[in-house]
Image 1: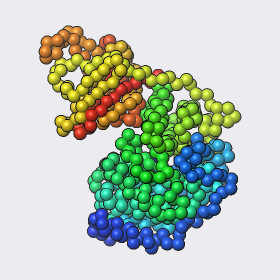
Image 2: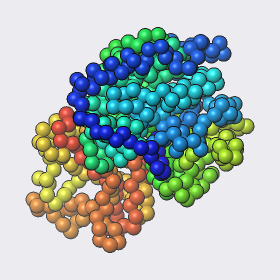
Image 3: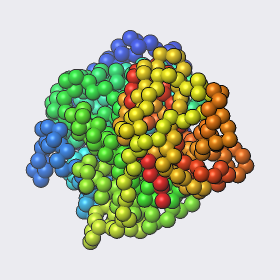
Image 4: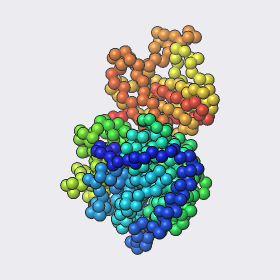
Length: 549
């Protein structure tokens, strides 16, 4: 989860330094680590094994006790520590999580990158704060995940956060490759610090990596650069010795695209941690909770579970939750928040894929720290006590078959590399070597749609790089295509005569809704707009849909 804070930032360094190339940065980082990590192993976190909890030595053993967790968030991962002080997680809070919420694991986010210099030397005062959180959590929970590179914005290409960076003038100009070296230096320092700590502590390498350039500065990392960094940082962590050779380490997908992850060979004990906030128009925006939206979350978890089984890695949903206030202002109906939270619990237990709620406090809170009370319905929703909170029945997505490629005015506008089998519902595409995205529309006259409906489409399985969105079409028997064939598919229009276009989304994670509004066109039916991206290898895709009632 990404959080922003208002308030004045601490002063940045005043003397500019020249931009470092990759070799210079690696040399400096190595020298810095030799000076800073000597003699500080465990960093104040007890290394002794807690006899109350068994020590896991395999990924399966680590996962065996993980069902439901929460986050000590909106504290150390805030842009600078004073901004997070109202949400400081103390021993009493960890007790509430464990004893009242019945959580079995906790994730500890922190912004070590904002409290480190250009060479990756993390400030000792900040590390002690992280140590304190880790130590309190390990005393109470079977499993603890430390997430020390939470919202590493500069690496993603977002440079507005530079004003909160301790070494801003030197960190700001770094390229994505240089940030990768800096991140490895930080992880080497952290891994050395925690190398003798219980194996119940696991490492989450990089929270929500991606490329989301929003302002001037070097662009963020690509999926390929992330995969290359994983291949470099994992051996560096393992090489620090102690228990780290057998420690669980979590990888997150670029822009939450686990399909783009490459699992490094000989990576050791690892897992994959996608974050799902579907349906996003409810969890983050002003939409209402619908049964279709709840079904979309279930399908996201099923997709991740299948992916993990195919790739032989465990999956843990590292973040999921719903905001307390809409746009940070209007209160969200507590009953909807509680029902959705209980739905996340039910899904985790039913599919045996653990989830870690975001979060315990602040805008996504389950618990109100100032009043020391659970928010309405939340304790029952997360703990299932005294009885599980009632949740409405969740429908299943409809697997789409039948239909056809749309008949359009210019049939030659569509790419000949597509072929569609209505018996299976599978659309095939040749490798796209054309240098431009190719597009088409699949129409399903068997699925009628009406005004003011919201429909959700998702790819149930796919290969290749796609963008998808839903929209309504209708058949116009009065018009002909350019070859003279009568009857063409026409995009439905709203009451102002505007075409209904979808919101484009990646194929996975899917389940993004499109609201149709008032339709002026009669006899409209469901359709899927598709983009097959330039440079994509050959691929195929099939779909399911649901109405978000």
